[in-house]
Image 1: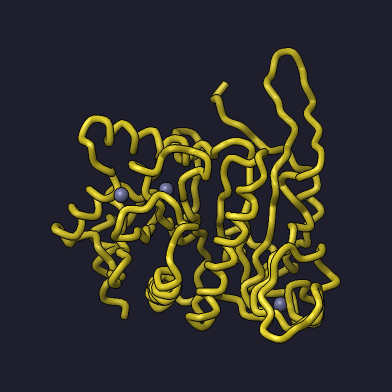
Image 2: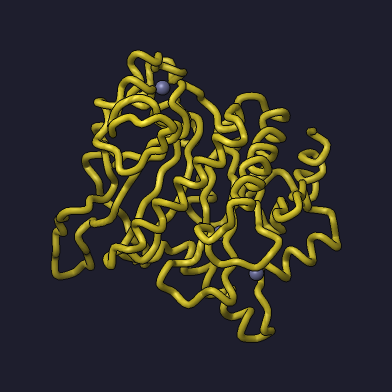
Length: 322
Ligand SMILES: [Zn+2]
Ligand SMILES: [Zn+2]
Ligand SMILES: [Zn+2]
Protein backbone atom coordinates (compact mmCIF):
# COMPACT_ATOMS: atom_id res chain seq x y z
CA UNK A 1 0.00 0.00 0.00
CA UNK A 2 2.80 2.42 0.88
CA UNK A 3 5.23 1.24 -1.79
CA UNK A 4 7.70 0.46 0.99
CA UNK A 5 9.90 -2.64 1.02
CA UNK A 6 10.40 -4.62 4.22
CA UNK A 7 13.14 -7.21 4.83
CA UNK A 8 11.64 -10.15 6.75
CA UNK A 9 14.60 -11.73 8.54
CA UNK A 10 13.62 -14.30 11.14
CA UNK A 11 17.29 -15.12 11.85
CA UNK A 12 17.74 -11.65 13.37
CA UNK A 13 15.54 -12.77 16.28
CA UNK A 14 18.36 -15.12 17.36
CA UNK A 15 20.77 -12.23 18.02
CA UNK A 16 22.24 -11.92 21.51
CA UNK A 17 19.94 -9.90 23.74
CA UNK A 18 21.11 -7.15 26.06
CA UNK A 19 21.37 -8.05 29.77
CA UNK A 20 18.31 -7.69 32.05
CA UNK A 21 19.24 -4.13 32.97
CA UNK A 22 19.88 -3.24 29.36
CA UNK A 23 23.37 -2.04 30.30
CA UNK A 24 26.79 -3.22 29.16
CA UNK A 25 26.61 -6.95 29.53
CA UNK A 26 29.71 -8.23 27.74
CA UNK A 27 33.10 -8.62 29.31
CA UNK A 28 36.01 -9.05 26.96
CA UNK A 29 36.28 -12.85 27.63
CA UNK A 30 32.70 -13.24 26.47
CA UNK A 31 32.80 -10.66 23.67
CA UNK A 32 32.93 -12.18 20.16
CA UNK A 33 34.55 -9.01 18.76
CA UNK A 34 37.55 -8.89 21.15
CA UNK A 35 40.98 -10.07 19.90
CA UNK A 36 41.50 -13.70 20.91
CA UNK A 37 37.84 -14.60 20.29
CA UNK A 38 38.06 -14.65 16.48
CA UNK A 39 36.53 -18.14 16.37
CA UNK A 40 33.28 -16.71 17.71
CA UNK A 41 32.57 -14.88 14.44
CA UNK A 42 32.18 -16.18 10.88
CA UNK A 43 35.56 -16.25 8.97
CA UNK A 44 36.86 -12.75 8.20
CA UNK A 45 36.50 -11.18 4.74
CA UNK A 46 39.09 -8.47 5.50
CA UNK A 47 41.57 -7.67 8.26
CA UNK A 48 44.51 -5.30 8.64
CA UNK A 49 47.48 -6.95 10.35
CA UNK A 50 50.85 -5.34 10.99
CA UNK A 51 52.67 -8.55 11.83
CA UNK A 52 52.33 -11.61 9.70
CA UNK A 53 49.60 -13.60 11.33
CA UNK A 54 47.13 -15.99 9.77
CA UNK A 55 43.50 -15.09 9.15
CA UNK A 56 41.04 -15.42 12.02
CA UNK A 57 43.72 -15.12 14.67
CA UNK A 58 44.84 -12.13 16.75
CA UNK A 59 47.22 -9.35 15.58
CA UNK A 60 44.66 -7.29 13.62
CA UNK A 61 43.71 -3.66 14.00
CA UNK A 62 40.42 -3.68 12.06
CA UNK A 63 38.54 -6.83 11.10
CA UNK A 64 35.51 -7.32 8.84
CA UNK A 65 33.33 -10.43 9.15
CA UNK A 66 29.98 -11.47 7.72
CA UNK A 67 27.18 -10.71 10.15
CA UNK A 68 26.36 -13.88 12.09
CA UNK A 69 22.68 -12.94 12.04
CA UNK A 70 22.35 -11.34 8.60
CA UNK A 71 19.32 -9.34 7.55
CA UNK A 72 20.01 -10.50 3.98
CA UNK A 73 21.95 -13.51 2.69
CA UNK A 74 24.39 -13.89 -0.19
CA UNK A 75 23.87 -17.43 -1.41
CA UNK A 76 20.21 -18.02 -1.96
CA UNK A 77 17.09 -16.57 -0.56
CA UNK A 78 13.47 -17.36 -0.28
CA UNK A 79 10.59 -15.28 -1.41
CA UNK A 80 7.06 -16.23 -0.55
CA UNK A 81 5.27 -15.19 -3.71
CA UNK A 82 1.55 -14.66 -3.42
CA UNK A 83 -0.49 -13.34 -6.27
CA UNK A 84 -1.66 -10.15 -4.59
CA UNK A 85 1.76 -9.01 -3.39
CA UNK A 86 5.20 -8.25 -4.72
CA UNK A 87 8.16 -10.09 -3.16
CA UNK A 88 11.80 -10.88 -3.88
CA UNK A 89 14.39 -13.18 -2.34
CA UNK A 90 16.23 -11.41 0.48
CA UNK A 91 19.66 -11.43 -1.08
CA UNK A 92 22.50 -9.09 -0.21
CA UNK A 93 25.69 -9.05 1.83
CA UNK A 94 25.65 -7.99 5.47
CA UNK A 95 29.02 -7.44 7.16
CA UNK A 96 30.32 -6.15 10.48
CA UNK A 97 33.36 -3.87 10.72
CA UNK A 98 35.04 -4.50 14.09
CA UNK A 99 36.75 -1.19 14.75
CA UNK A 100 39.22 -2.16 17.46
CA UNK A 101 40.85 -5.35 18.78
CA UNK A 102 40.33 -4.00 22.30
CA UNK A 103 36.99 -3.77 24.02
CA UNK A 104 36.41 -0.07 23.34
CA UNK A 105 32.77 0.98 23.49
CA UNK A 106 32.83 4.27 21.60
CA UNK A 107 34.33 5.41 18.32
CA UNK A 108 35.15 8.78 19.90
CA UNK A 109 37.58 6.98 22.24
CA UNK A 110 39.64 5.46 19.42
CA UNK A 111 42.78 7.13 18.10
CA UNK A 112 42.57 9.10 14.86
CA UNK A 113 44.67 6.57 12.95
CA UNK A 114 42.43 3.75 14.17
CA UNK A 115 39.36 5.59 12.86
CA UNK A 116 41.24 6.18 9.58
CA UNK A 117 41.79 2.40 9.35
CA UNK A 118 38.03 1.90 9.84
CA UNK A 119 37.34 4.32 6.95
CA UNK A 120 39.83 2.37 4.81
CA UNK A 121 37.96 -0.82 5.66
CA UNK A 122 34.69 0.78 4.50
CA UNK A 123 36.38 1.77 1.24
CA UNK A 124 37.95 -1.65 0.68
CA UNK A 125 34.69 -3.47 1.30
CA UNK A 126 32.64 -1.07 -0.88
CA UNK A 127 35.14 -1.57 -3.74
CA UNK A 128 35.19 -5.35 -3.30
CA UNK A 129 31.40 -5.73 -3.02
CA UNK A 130 31.06 -3.37 -5.99
CA UNK A 131 32.70 -6.02 -8.20
CA UNK A 132 29.74 -8.31 -7.60
CA UNK A 133 27.26 -7.69 -10.40
CA UNK A 134 24.34 -8.47 -8.11
CA UNK A 135 24.77 -5.47 -5.82
CA UNK A 136 23.78 -1.97 -6.83
CA UNK A 137 24.53 -0.15 -3.61
CA UNK A 138 26.48 -0.55 -0.38
CA UNK A 139 25.13 1.22 2.70
CA UNK A 140 27.58 1.82 5.56
CA UNK A 141 26.01 2.54 8.94
CA UNK A 142 26.75 2.55 12.62
CA UNK A 143 24.60 1.83 15.67
CA UNK A 144 26.40 2.91 18.82
CA UNK A 145 24.63 2.35 22.13
CA UNK A 146 21.49 0.38 23.01
CA UNK A 147 19.07 3.16 22.13
CA UNK A 148 20.62 3.24 18.66
CA UNK A 149 19.99 -0.49 18.17
CA UNK A 150 23.40 -2.01 19.03
CA UNK A 151 23.22 -5.50 20.56
CA UNK A 152 26.98 -5.67 21.27
CA UNK A 153 28.88 -2.91 23.06
CA UNK A 154 32.25 -3.51 21.34
CA UNK A 155 32.78 -0.65 18.89
CA UNK A 156 31.66 -1.71 15.40
CA UNK A 157 29.79 -0.60 12.30
CA UNK A 158 28.03 -2.49 9.54
CA UNK A 159 27.50 -2.51 5.83
CA UNK A 160 24.78 -3.96 3.66
CA UNK A 161 25.11 -4.50 -0.08
CA UNK A 162 21.75 -4.75 -1.83
CA UNK A 163 20.47 -5.51 -5.32
CA UNK A 164 18.34 -2.36 -5.04
CA UNK A 165 19.30 1.22 -4.18
CA UNK A 166 17.77 2.08 -0.77
CA UNK A 167 14.71 4.32 -0.91
CA UNK A 168 16.36 7.19 1.01
CA UNK A 169 19.26 7.28 -1.44
CA UNK A 170 16.90 7.03 -4.42
CA UNK A 171 14.96 10.04 -3.12
CA UNK A 172 18.10 12.09 -2.43
CA UNK A 173 19.46 11.31 -5.89
CA UNK A 174 16.13 12.24 -7.50
CA UNK A 175 16.00 15.68 -5.87
CA UNK A 176 19.71 16.26 -6.49
CA UNK A 177 19.11 15.43 -10.16
CA UNK A 178 16.08 17.74 -10.42
CA UNK A 179 18.14 20.55 -8.95
CA UNK A 180 21.05 19.84 -11.28
CA UNK A 181 18.81 19.79 -14.33
CA UNK A 182 17.18 23.09 -13.47
CA UNK A 183 20.24 24.99 -12.24
CA UNK A 184 23.26 23.10 -13.58
CA UNK A 185 24.69 22.85 -10.09
CA UNK A 186 25.11 20.21 -7.39
CA UNK A 187 22.52 20.79 -4.67
CA UNK A 188 24.92 19.80 -1.89
CA UNK A 189 27.68 22.13 -3.15
CA UNK A 190 25.11 24.92 -3.21
CA UNK A 191 23.90 24.13 0.32
CA UNK A 192 27.49 24.17 1.57
CA UNK A 193 28.11 27.51 -0.05
CA UNK A 194 24.91 28.94 1.45
CA UNK A 195 25.55 27.54 4.93
CA UNK A 196 29.13 28.81 4.98
CA UNK A 197 27.90 32.30 4.12
CA UNK A 198 25.02 32.19 6.63
CA UNK A 199 27.11 30.55 9.36
CA UNK A 200 24.04 29.88 11.53
CA UNK A 201 23.96 26.13 11.10
CA UNK A 202 27.66 25.36 10.67
CA UNK A 203 29.22 23.32 13.46
CA UNK A 204 32.85 22.89 12.50
CA UNK A 205 35.15 22.81 9.48
CA UNK A 206 38.51 21.36 8.56
CA UNK A 207 40.48 22.00 5.38
CA UNK A 208 38.42 19.55 3.31
CA UNK A 209 35.27 18.89 5.36
CA UNK A 210 32.40 20.83 6.78
CA UNK A 211 29.92 19.84 9.52
CA UNK A 212 26.50 21.43 9.73
CA UNK A 213 23.04 20.95 11.18
CA UNK A 214 20.75 20.60 8.17
CA UNK A 215 18.00 23.20 7.64
CA UNK A 216 15.25 20.63 8.29
CA UNK A 217 16.76 18.08 10.69
CA UNK A 218 14.60 15.14 11.78
CA UNK A 219 16.35 14.72 15.13
CA UNK A 220 17.76 17.03 17.82
CA UNK A 221 21.45 17.69 17.08
CA UNK A 222 21.37 15.82 13.77
CA UNK A 223 24.68 16.75 12.11
CA UNK A 224 25.96 16.14 8.60
CA UNK A 225 29.57 15.91 7.49
CA UNK A 226 30.04 16.96 3.87
CA UNK A 227 33.24 17.09 1.81
CA UNK A 228 33.90 20.66 0.64
CA UNK A 229 34.97 19.56 -2.83
CA UNK A 230 32.38 17.91 -5.02
CA UNK A 231 32.53 14.12 -4.96
CA UNK A 232 29.78 11.53 -5.38
CA UNK A 233 31.69 8.56 -4.02
CA UNK A 234 32.95 8.07 -0.46
CA UNK A 235 35.18 5.22 -1.68
CA UNK A 236 37.14 7.55 -3.97
CA UNK A 237 38.62 9.70 -1.20
CA UNK A 238 42.39 10.14 -1.11
CA UNK A 239 44.58 8.90 1.75
CA UNK A 240 44.87 12.46 3.02
CA UNK A 241 41.09 12.85 2.96
CA UNK A 242 40.55 9.67 4.98
CA UNK A 243 43.09 10.78 7.61
CA UNK A 244 41.54 14.20 7.86
CA UNK A 245 38.00 12.79 7.92
CA UNK A 246 38.92 10.37 10.73
CA UNK A 247 40.07 13.23 12.98
CA UNK A 248 37.13 15.42 11.94
CA UNK A 249 34.51 12.70 12.54
CA UNK A 250 35.99 12.02 15.98
CA UNK A 251 35.90 15.72 16.79
CA UNK A 252 32.20 15.97 15.89
CA UNK A 253 31.38 12.85 17.96
CA UNK A 254 33.42 14.31 20.83
CA UNK A 255 31.38 17.54 20.67
CA UNK A 256 28.20 15.48 21.08
CA UNK A 257 29.66 13.41 23.91
CA UNK A 258 30.92 16.50 25.76
CA UNK A 259 27.35 17.82 25.63
CA UNK A 260 25.41 14.67 26.43
CA UNK A 261 27.81 12.29 28.17
CA UNK A 262 27.44 8.72 27.00
CA UNK A 263 25.43 9.04 23.86
CA UNK A 264 23.67 6.56 21.60
CA UNK A 265 23.71 7.51 17.95
CA UNK A 266 23.48 6.20 14.42
CA UNK A 267 25.37 7.40 11.42
CA UNK A 268 24.98 6.50 7.78
CA UNK A 269 27.26 7.16 4.84
CA UNK A 270 25.29 8.16 1.76
CA UNK A 271 27.36 7.62 -1.34
CA UNK A 272 26.38 7.28 -5.00
CA UNK A 273 25.55 3.77 -6.25
CA UNK A 274 28.75 2.44 -7.84
CA UNK A 275 27.24 1.74 -11.26
CA UNK A 276 25.08 4.82 -11.44
CA UNK A 277 25.77 8.00 -13.36
CA UNK A 278 24.97 10.27 -10.39
CA UNK A 279 28.55 11.52 -10.35
CA UNK A 280 27.84 15.07 -11.48
CA UNK A 281 25.01 15.86 -9.13
CA UNK A 282 25.15 13.56 -6.09
CA UNK A 283 27.53 14.43 -3.27
CA UNK A 284 28.46 11.88 -0.61
CA UNK A 285 27.96 12.75 3.06
CA UNK A 286 27.68 11.32 6.55
CA UNK A 287 24.48 11.84 8.53
CA UNK A 288 24.93 11.58 12.30
CA UNK A 289 21.69 11.03 14.21
CA UNK A 290 21.93 11.21 18.01
CA UNK A 291 19.27 9.18 19.80
CA UNK A 292 18.05 11.87 22.17
CA UNK A 293 14.36 11.65 21.32
CA UNK A 294 12.22 8.74 20.24
CA UNK A 295 10.11 8.57 17.15
CA UNK A 296 6.52 8.35 18.40
CA UNK A 297 2.96 8.20 17.13
CA UNK A 298 3.07 11.34 15.04
CA UNK A 299 6.33 10.30 13.33
CA UNK A 300 5.08 6.76 12.58
CA UNK A 301 1.66 7.98 11.54
CA UNK A 302 2.69 10.87 9.36
CA UNK A 303 6.18 10.09 8.09
CA UNK A 304 7.20 13.59 9.28
CA UNK A 305 9.20 14.53 12.34
CA UNK A 306 8.72 16.84 15.28
CA UNK A 307 12.12 18.12 16.39
CA UNK A 308 12.20 20.08 19.67
CA UNK A 309 15.62 21.65 18.92
CA UNK A 310 16.01 24.14 16.07
CA UNK A 311 19.08 23.48 13.91
CA UNK A 312 20.46 27.00 14.54
CA UNK A 313 20.33 26.36 18.30
CA UNK A 314 21.83 22.87 17.95
CA UNK A 315 24.68 24.24 15.82
CA UNK A 316 25.37 27.06 18.29
CA UNK A 317 25.55 24.62 21.21
CA UNK A 318 27.74 22.17 19.26
CA UNK A 319 30.11 24.96 18.22
CA UNK A 320 30.63 25.99 21.84
CA UNK A 321 31.08 22.44 23.12
CA UNK A 322 34.83 22.29 22.45
ZN1 LIG B 1 34.94 -6.78 22.94
ZN1 LIG C 1 28.59 18.68 -4.92
ZN1 LIG D 1 21.77 11.55 2.87
